[in-house]
Image 1: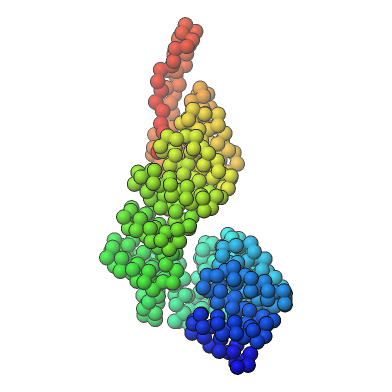
Image 2: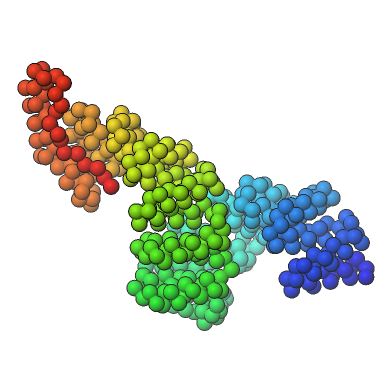
Length: 455
């Protein structure tokens, strides 16, 4: 056969997803024409789709040596990096791609996804908006933009775009899914139910619709219907890992620990090194007071991703619960290294310092929240008050207890702790003791004061 005939035979096999056959045929084509980058790209696609990323990267790099400005090769390279989780390299490759052809909507969509995965939503939106300037009627990029706008809280802008899509194409299932998600966000379960049910009337096996219908059923207390939809989502969904991870979190938040553990275990069987799942399995076990097992899962999550701030936070919290203060402080400091403005971590660290007998360190943590992050943060005010009390700075303690009381917080526990009459009585008793006893018996301990520890 000629090169052209062999190449076409490989393309036909690839369309049918007969990867082994396509790989063999394209290999023969490459022997007939060794420098053909299109054949190399097809082989790279097969390697990527079958999980051989090293093989894919090698072929794509060889293609770029032959023609470094080839649009499709750069596009494939960017997507290969994206699928491996190397977001920075993906962005670099895809930025190169749109320099070659600024109008290429596929490259811009992949680039937008890369920015979204990196957490740079501004660049993601900007990239999609530029794509729509070149192709105003491109449904895929418009839907991507609507989804990102919704997830950023720009609900009306997202709704407007997706409504345009669904009005033009009433059977656009991704658009209907997004409308259902918007309705759920607005707690309009009836409208959401209508959108997801319509999706199933178009595509009975749509895993996303089953997943969201399961969530609605669970919120309504119908566990049997929820289970049915969740099982259908898993049966028909291509991304079983994400479904199981999300289900695990939903069940955990509902207090359905048995079901949650089953889903996290399923997710771990699909990917034993997913840090999100390992971290959440640890949380679930700690919720059930299985501290030793939970701590091991947090450690696994950190081994996989050393800069995973939330795993460090949860590990620090678990060590604090078990009174292992040195390890708790160690991991909370690491959490703050990666998320320096995490108010929860600062408050937690301040509390651990206070319990460990390091009030000056505690005061620094609580004061840092109030001075640089949130001057009205009630838990930090309470922390400053308790720490000043521990240090004997009673006037300063009273000032902050009064601030807590004046915040109008709905947290009754904090308000009760800050009752100025009780605190003033304690301070007065302390002062009286010091004036009558301190000089006579300088080393005698003061009377025990009531202290509170927030769980």
